[in-house]
Length: 157
Figure 1 (tube, rainbow, N blue to C red):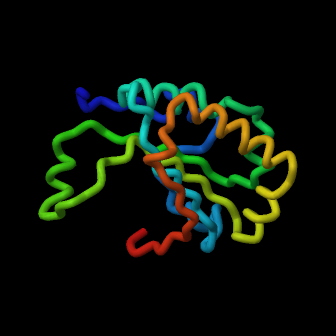
Figure 2: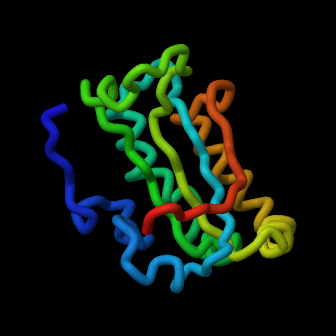
């Protein structure tokens, strides 16, 4: 890759969801104890990194209607797009035995574990989750991916 990046306002997937670097009031707006859902994804073997990112950022956000996000209680959705750079070796440093890198990370924030259970257990939510999953079959290799349910421990704001 040539190192250039698109601005947040240029990218189609960012028109619907707030994205980019969190503002100073990020935790105050989202809540100090929010739950983060992190989807650590690897692309299907037949897709290039560029094809994976293009599908994920341009097509996947509209796999279901706009009512899906509020129904699921999602307060923030960020797509972390992996960069193709040799500088990764600098970051790896002395670490050995690492698994292959992920192609992207989807981060979704919800209010609480209780809200996650309440909002994601409804029939309508399950339909949205199924529709997203069906679309994910077009670009994600779930046999080599994983999902984390976590909370942030901010060490340095």
